[in-house]
Length: 260
Image: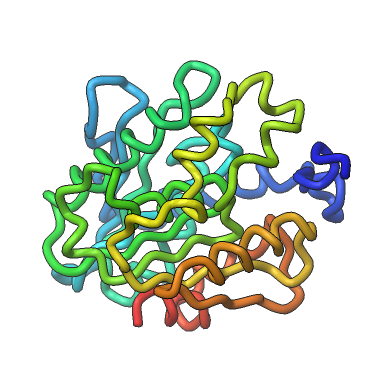
């Protein structure tokens, strides 16, 4: 198997390379139209450790945290603000953290930074917490179910939704990306949620698009099969880049599963 091809997405999606610009425009538009925002809230010593908080009109029912993807190497909180729309319309506050990116940090440091961001956001909003993350972000929210991660607010987390997650990092050691990520055997094992047995047992919904690359379908299935606390949704007619779009729709099945 050519793992570089197996884990490539943009080349196998029509107009795949246009999606980042599309996401940026949609996020900017949402921030312009939605005025109840708190931007650049700190959650760590590094300037990249910060989050934006999108608030509903009334007192929040709880908190959703969305963790972005980008193979731990790209993007930030401002690229995804529009994805808060669905949960905010249902009365939830939504936190969107940035985190330090490879190669400046190792994956274990990114995991800790995301945990810090979730705890910091939890201090701003009362009530139950739901975590959603896409691709590498799916990996990161899945890690929050693992007891080796220090997370003060874990007992408030009602559901985790890893979307198109990377549950087993070992195959990525055989890609060119590892020249940036620098995974070794020990780190890939320790940071792979599908391989970690000491977990909190938080209800988890693994979500993946039916039209995704086979490697991502395998990753999603394997994580859901490994975790008794997890169920699996394979969304028809969705690929790796549009599978997250229903988060912006308050009436979508994805939002219902996340908040239910």
